[in-house]
Length: 163
Length: 99
Image (cartoon, rainbow over all chains, first blue to last red; front, side, top):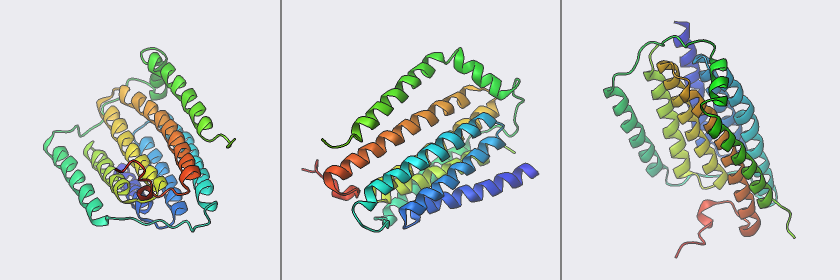
């Protein structure tokens, strides 16, 4: 029972903050709402027994992305001297696309039999993750390291001072 | 509690992100919508992994999170570069490729 209540609370926070991300007029407020949404997702991960993923979510997403986006806003908005406002356009069309998308996904979900109870995980989840990353998934893991390096170099190249 | 509520929640967040991507005029706002959609996908992956007791989904989530961070960093670097060249980040002013 407590699980359902916790899920309902998290769901309300997530949906509310997600709506605020796409609707708020102030871009800076939108980023702060995104931070709340990402933190709520970390809560959902905790509820699904994935403590390690919740920590990664908080560190990388809520920490990293929000910092980068705030930096980008400061760079692109303050220089131009405009206010931080932003508007939406074609709200009707966008809402239609979103509602059709949700209806499609929900209709598929309703028709399929889905598991109603959780099976026991074989042992400590963090331990399983660590072992799988360094054995079966070691090649994608190493490629991820290369991707991060290339991404970092690319971002530094793009953002180099003008000469 | 079953798997269905998690999938429905993630579908709602995905649709909200899609709405943001299609309606925002500011490029950074569009990127925020993409982040929301990625987030919904992550919830889906973790929920399926938990309810099938297979860790593979969680490992994919780990990879998705890292790739999303790299994508956000590069996307925002492109936004900053665009701003330097065109002095705007509004998506409908960036129509250089329009014939």
